[in-house]
Image (cartoon, rainbow over all chains, first blue to last red; front, side):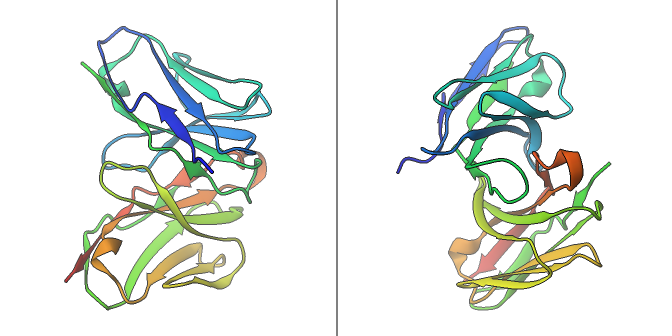
Length: 114
Length: 113
């Protein structure tokens, strides 16, 4: 079975631009979470979606938005990019939500903002 | 502010020895605890998870949880050079925040041949 797939792998954008990151979960997984990881730090929670509904949102500005589609794939959108948005963006899927559903990560999208 | 703390390392261990990685967390209501391994430039890979006090073993890996002390650890027996990576501890908070994981910054482990 295919794991979590993310696209693109790498992306270079300029300050003020917009970016869309895409994620396809493991087959059968209905929950998708997005995390941001800055070099040298642990991942920071951005969003979780389950059955196309937003289940939770981390402490990120409104420039960050996401959605989940009927096939459970997901997009993360970031508007008005700042230099500080440069990071590894991780998508993870799990069968359900809550404490007992371990996250399985994709390979990530490396975003560089110049 | 719910926090997860790890020693950043690097922790250097001879090949074949036991590597011991530690993690403390601040939220006493935390329910689930996860260890991930992350190679440089790659995404985190799930190693183990533990929910109940005590030990849980999986091959060369043993996770230990002590909720009273708010402490979780990972032991790696017969360490191999391929175990060299950053190990991330992640905690699922209790209550209404159980949709997210709170992560430590990771411990860098180096296995010396």
